Length: 288
Length: 308
View: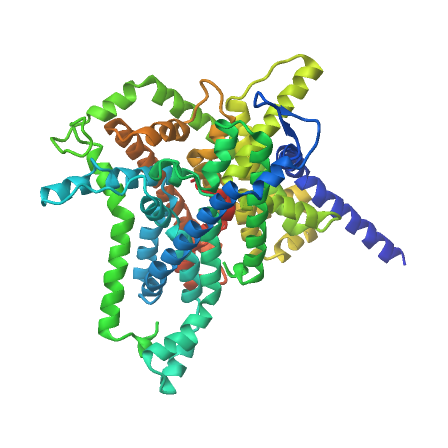
């Protein structure tokens, strides 16, 4: 009896200590994250006055009604299609690439991986700018094309430039989970399939591909989510028009000065991402 | 690793060709940019002769130098604070059980998932409200600047540090701390002499991640910056949207070199700590090395929205 009581007391003390150790971080996140999140949610019900200021009174659903109107719906659809195209392109190019790395000898493998990591950790803004420089009508590609008697490259400020930029920026997010899934796969299963007279393609389709599915799902979510809210790439390579979700939200705050509408949009984007993330954790995201 | 399943030579050659094309895609823009940053011509695409003209212009540009100074201040402050808070949060989550833990766990993950743009909006509205509130309360008028930028960076960095350190803690043998306690070490001694040395690679990885995120951030910073407190990425972003110029080429190349140096440091650090790190999986240590720290960056999910 006494022992049990002592143990319970020790456990309570430990649990209190655990809470106190993390307390500064929790307080910080409540103050500088949870409360700001709450403020955005509250703003989405506020009123925009004729001067563009936000009045925290006359609570209404105007901003939310506008989120579901035609113009934002077009932006949502456009961004969704762009993010989907980015994801598919990343997957198509990354799968053979990750497969190739995963089937090299361990020494070569780690060298090839480092070569993926260098651009991955490099400044994203600079990489996007490098793409703009390369694709520009006065850029090196254009000059070469003209020297060869062709036309100057006119890709910049088109949807294609944005797509190239997004694939360029987010492809490592696809490669790494795919590589992780393929690398830890049990290759003796493929051998077994071959022993049972499966052709190379059949063995791949029926064994390798299903086994690497967690990597496919993880990579797709990791590319799709940031691509959906992308701001920097469309702003630099697309010139900001037509707007995608990211620039559309920024526009509401910095140019249109419609904070309630911008807040409602931000909350919607966040909810979409939250749902996608929950899907990701349910479907093998833990394997990362 | 799989002799029996070695793909036929043709498939293998196609895979290799594709692989090198992907590397070309990754590196061509960076290399072209770097080469042209040494171009003397003020027309960006036309090569005349190599020179350091634009690097000189960069060093003599007061705006660029002030932006670099601001960036470094914010990065240093936010990294130090978020490493301390994030590591403590990781230990609290991974080593203890207490009431309300799951809610706080969710709160700790949310900044990683949230899109950059939403985070930026949150911070702008928060500081607008908070400054108004403080002025009404104390009469002191605060404004956006290095302070608000640092506070915002800490808010997203804590979570990234915590994720990386937790991954490390999860792989640690809990009996080690029990053993220390059995030998009459106080909780603080146990932390200093057992836990901290063992999780050090995780803490260092978290610090590097926080540093990189802070140095790279454009979107959140541009919403909470004030006059004179512009950071380098925000300054460059402003220029880059409008034009392509040799000066931006030079500044960009300098930023690129800085981030590659950071990768080199982190790789060197990992290689050195690898034997300690992977006691149970020594033969896998080589391949796990590069991917393990990525987990943090990869799982940046939504927070990466168009940024960094």
